[in-house]
Length: 273
Image (cartoon, rainbow, N blue to C red; front, side, top):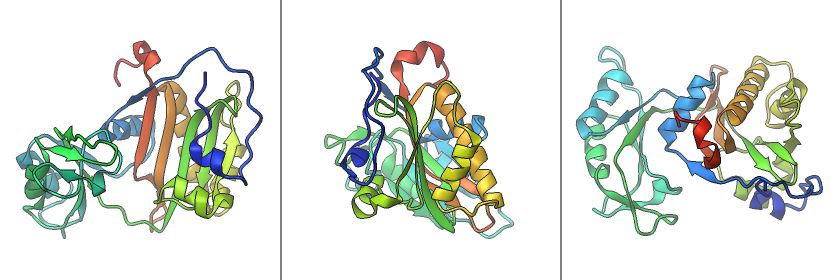
């Protein structure tokens, strides 16, 4: 059957979803992918993400920092390096070699090689992975400066009998924490899968998450939501979460971080994932 409502929705007394329909016959299972793969897929669907590259060696990581995400003749830009392991809580994790944290900021030459050498080939221990997961790749991504941090997700939900669009003006923190502290700031919009996400629904959600009606930012967010929905259906996603969805100082709307789960029973349709 379809996935049930997330825990944060069920726990939130101020959020009311439609009564559950009779159980569907299909069972959804989730396939997890690394961050760099989900960002590649987003880019293919016209969704803006920070510039990012994957490295398999410390030398490759340093090359990416100094020549691909920076230019020799320009001031250095900060870059984030992230261990590519399938686990949450990487930033608070510890590698078995004693190196702390699977997420670090790179601000000067030499750091990319230094951090990557501590991560690659090592096992990262997190709350979700207490026995450790081997890190074989690192993601280097340009640092984003954000005016606003918002939240968006689309899930396949049994209570809504189909896709459910979820948004909040409070991004950058756990949506479960938002549900506990300010549940009134979580907005939901059931989507009729027979007609898809409608423009007026996306326009209202853009307003709900804090963007001004009629603004260029609202229009960009609407376009992004329509592309997210196309990706959700086209890639057989079971959940697609963007947190944070950022408004930059120059008015761009950027998916800074994401979690994407795919229905592994649709593997025969998704050979590239």
